[in-house]
Length: 309
Ligand code: NAD
Image (cartoon, rainbow, N blue to C red; front, side, top):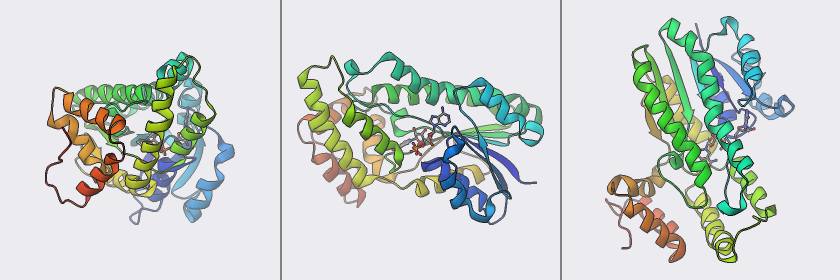
């Protein structure tokens, strides 16, 4: 029988693409429960699903920040059995810390961290009973390495990484696998929504220097990075499809080789100084080098990333 795959956050981006790709699996290995918080937005998904709709794909309501919504959603799945859970729903938050409210920060953790934890708690008893299951989490390269002006978002993804890496040990005993997928920049509504937030936000209480670093250095550099190395949600979904189809799923899987030189900064120097100092130089001294460096390394003219010292 096909494996039941429950995915959160399918109204757009990676979740939508993943749902559609799995539902069109040529070997029909999956039945996809594509969920979203607001069913009013299901049109795009339904159109993309085409004839798979009602066959290998069903749409359901799910708000990952609500216990009732999770219980209600699972009660509608036949036998309540989820074979593969994909925690994809997430929100971003960017800007100078002084200008962000604690409530906005808590919302990021409620969705990105507690949202995933809530779903896992709900499906775990069934997976343990059946001695099988796969929990996939859409994390981020920011779950591995901090990024300036993304402190709270990165913290929420670090929390995800620590939680699931710890849980993976116990679950292996139950034949349940965990996979953390770590995309770099992906061109979805995600970035658009963030930039919209940012362009209207005033970040009250932030000093002029910090505001100018954010607006005049960080934002253009970030836009350029998305433009130069950004992946499509289709490409990220393809990687996740492979992870789900694999007999021995990996604990971690990055999706963007063009981001690898930046990710390597941390692995190359466990003290962390290389990452912090290089990121500092790239932002405050030579912002344009960020993209030059990435492009140069992407065409593999350097075997080891070489960074200004
Ligand atoms: P997206 O904004 O298109 O998708 C996120 C989805 O989560 C949206 O459909 C949104 O409605 C949904 N969502 C938010 N709160 C929810 C809630 N409480 N309950 C249910 N759904 C909720 O952006 P995306 O890029 O497809 O994001 C998917 C995942 O990928 C996120 O976890 C994000 O952190 C991660 N990610 C994105 C990028 C990027 O650059 N876009 C990079 C790395 C990781």
